Length: 104
Image (tube, rainbow, N blue to C red; front, top):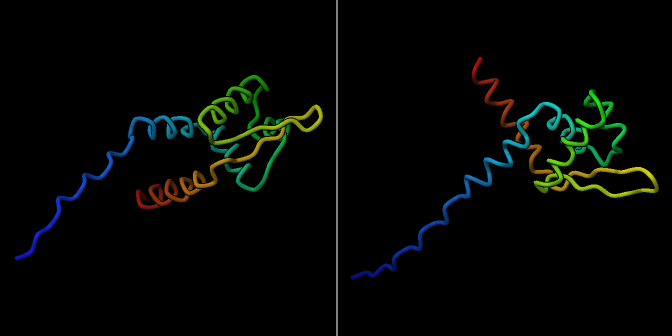
């Protein structure tokens, strides 16, 4: 006769918080920023030039990414330099590309 212990339920994924992260990433300018930062830290001026548009809009994109823990910033003299904190988000690009490829 064999006895088995009841298995503890698996933790429920936090879909609400995950959806917030995906929503933050769901903008072309923010994807460009994340992609650039995946290759190393970068100054605010270069990111603004990469994204285009005015510095206010770019600043808002950077603030959203920072608020959700995706990027960090630090001062170097009078310049602000940004770093990607969670490089795993770059895997999202490959996944999204695969979805697009399979839809063809």
